[in-house]
Length: 509
Image (tube, rainbow, N blue to C red; front, side, top):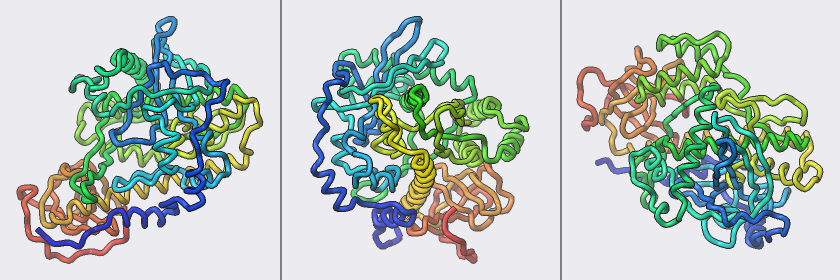
């Protein structure tokens, strides 16, 4: 085993945050302010919904819980969905020091080695978290009805006090709902929870079926997460899509659509989440043609959805790499302000026309803005933001989201470089994930690490199986470099590092 100086990934993460313009820590003014905050008092005019069987589904280590869910049968075969969203605005006044910090960073950043919360943990893990226990928390509740065919009817939006009865985990609930695992322990501890989750799953399946029929894209990219033990990277894992993750995704899409309907009905301007049309539809058409599939010359979400569904069924192993290609060709979602009376922009990938981000105010600042707009409308007050403010916020928060993804992507590479730093010379099975003038990239089958092919890349194309030898890792620059191995050399056997000349390159992919 090679000897390496210890790599401080947390220091790299903080440096990377600063590189992309984030504050990696909280100022003394924020700490003083948050230290003096008490849990907001419950106003007499809010609904008391603590008796309902609310539950949450999230990652096992998540403490910044933004929303909880509840369902019940409705008339004519409908299912009434309630999503309670934590009332961050009640504890974080507009223009306070904490609010200014949150607005600057715009989002929590999850680097795998350290989480940079948008709000101090006393808030996001405590006062404004919907964790179980305590006397109840203030929330904004969004209701909508899921009809038999999966279409939705927006319902009420109102303030309430709620109490989470069960903190559930994606993997446990997902395995149970997918029929590959036993029931979570909480189902035996909380009477009625099993029936509640099955009803939620029924509603989510209706919602997903309806959106798929109308062109929603089923994309599945691989984003490995570092597993840390005593600040050492021991593995990389890829969160698996399952019924529980799909349930929460569908419920949040439904809640965000219901919030836009409420704001529109109240005559209030808002910020919408937008993907107007693919950035490079021609590239998507060419990609599909490479699989023998014809797409129309004009963008069609339904046609693309059908192609993706066929490819996922035909080749599930390579589907994440095709998904990544399509995601890049579609382009990044953005935030745009929308005045009352203006036509909605639409979201190409979700097959919806009325969409915002308002369900995660502990983690995204745009959701705090949407919450303030809703609460002002509920009180009959003037809009708390001018058009110019909403326009500036939309542009800035789009910038911050893109920057956060760059930080997270770089840290995945840095963590992977640390994991592989003692394996230089080994040979791995891989799939080509990118081949262009900018370089040729592969993803190892195990561990799920992506790097650049520096030697022997000629003739490689996206989707091709290939063997590669690790020739260099550099956690500080996020480099993982390979050379192509010819012939039948067995994978993952330790070999001497290649001694052929090494080409230099610029940072990052």
